[in-house]
Image 1 (cartoon, rainbow over the protein chains, first blue to last red):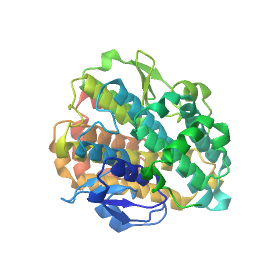
Image 2 (image 1 turned 180 degrees about the horizontal axis):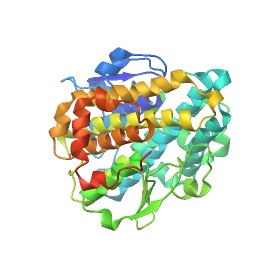
Image 3 (image 1 turned 60 degrees about the vertical axis):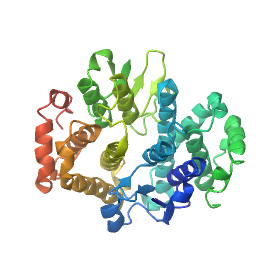
Image 4 (image 1 turned 30 degrees about the vertical axis):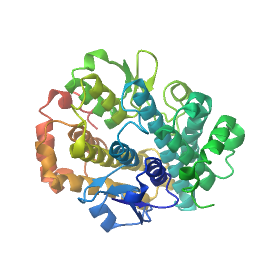
Length: 205
Length: 205
């Protein structure tokens, strides 16, 4: 299997952490890729994903698995199932819903990043930025209060959440989430003790 | 159960079609909601989803299931499982990956819509619009060529695809997808014969 990724992508990092935790990382060849809106990439769009997004898992028969949650589900299944995403019952829908929220928080932070780092300065819209940032921030607030998340066995909610927090550090270093959300700070400190999390941390800004 | 939705939301429509096809629509109370970036909605953000997105399924115990795929998976499970999303094997990862691509196409079309209908005119960036539109268009091109999709029993790929095509009609009426993609036109015509699809069509632009 081959995984397209970049070191800074929080979506690809989720998959890399999951693959390490599931004991499957040695079966995956990592293919570095660089992707940015407004940059054409006909080869990637035509052969891998018309959305030009990372990550994508390319199976040995050539078929492509996207997006990051689907890849994690696929790897979880390969490892026996029900490891990082509960297989059934209320726990399944809780974790899947939590993961969707964190995915949306990451999407919102990415839109903030594009607004300030990609869009020409004269065309930036503060109200859009503020709105997207509020989605991420309200999400962090929700998880800071949902302390039961932190005591569960490792799951995709926890993996996605640490990736989102480190993405905030990477791109919004002065946002102050540690001061605002002390439970998230303690959670993040604990997660960083895991080699899978520590060793996949994004480059320093 | 209660489902937050708007008549124009392709994401909510996916769930409505799925609920009808699974025989569960009578168990769902539809809650109309209006959501737009830059419009605060502290009540929805605090009680339902910090991302302020539609749809959300509110279960009888008050827990919230998001996003649209997770809701469809939940309903599919309620209906016995493996109906609209294959339960296992290569078919599962194929359909899940196809659905992720269509979800991304919808996200891209929504960003195009926000760029032209929401963002002040002086702040619009054509290169961004073109890039997002290209993602949707390349996706339609992929599915037009993937004719095996159209002959399968009804699944979430087909449901998402018809919602994406009708969203193109709603917001980008002159984009010309019928001329460019004749296989998608035939597929769309056939899908519109289903009451679940026909009766949930978005309002005319």
